[in-house]
Length: 79
Image (cartoon, rainbow, N blue to C red):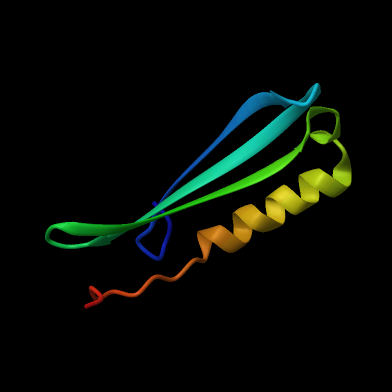
C-alpha cells in the first residue's frame, strides 16, 4: 500500500517470441472505491532478456515504478 491508498503489485515474467527471450515487468494497481468497487490498472514493460541489467533499462523501469506509485484515480464511480 502506498501513501495515496493504492495497492501495487510488481512482478516479472519471461517469455519467448520469434526466437527472442523477453523480460516483462508487470504492475497491477488497485484503488479501492468502498464499499463494493475498486479500480484496477495493469501495466507492462517488455524488453529483451539480455537488456534487463543494462543501466538505461534499469533506470527506465525505476522511473515507471516511481510514477505508478504516484498514480491518482477518481474517487467516484462513473455513470
